[in-house]
Image (cartoon, rainbow, N blue to C red; front, side):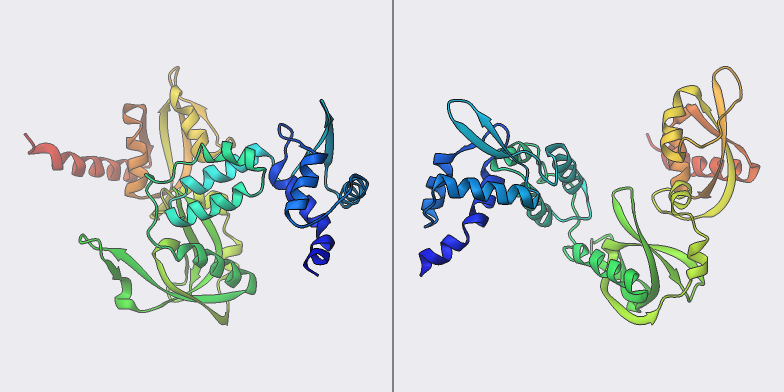
Length: 331
């Protein structure tokens, strides 16, 4: 009885064997396939396996053969190519919001999408252990809840926390639950953010997903559709720095010519660049003026300076002065 049941699964065993144990550099001979099937309790003749190959090809499986001392077979094309799998693993291992445990679980699943031989080349590039990772294991599932709420057009409720200097969680608003209409998830500065409408504040706000606790989907329909529909997510990402908001201003900045690359990386190729002299150019951008914006500019040292409006120039000077005062008394 068991043998008969196994015999009915012959086609699936062949497919699994080819997916896991074959690739262009490691084709399987007919003898290897027959031996593997025998180990699974399945007796098979060459002719029946040829028929199975043809059935799999008709189903869309790309089985190729190669001739050396004998004919061997392998899966020639898969859903994901090896460079694509490497890219997915890079994203998983560098994402702070995915815990170390979950990173290893995901990488193991990604490895299963190719042959055991190519999986070894993927494994050699995995460096998760010493990377800074979130300690909030639930974030992986929180993202799923948020996507569901967005697709169902529902609001969510959650608690929001910040860390104290003793590394303990402190609930904001004295633990009162936030009620938010979720509209989008945004990846910025290695963190996931929820973009949603806060009806109480009557504005679009964003929240770090790894700092959200007890997320629940509630059946109230979302609010703020009009406000969100007028929002350009690409523009929003460009004008906010590390997702810190501030008063939005049109700011003119002068850069050394050598800084054109970072400027385009930040604001896109459509940014208007105006030559100011032989060595400098200016751009005018709408940004959320915040300490993080000033910190971004400070990274360019003497190769960038705000030139308008004067109120932002003054704020930049005050920011630099405050930093300078910290070190003024140092010896």
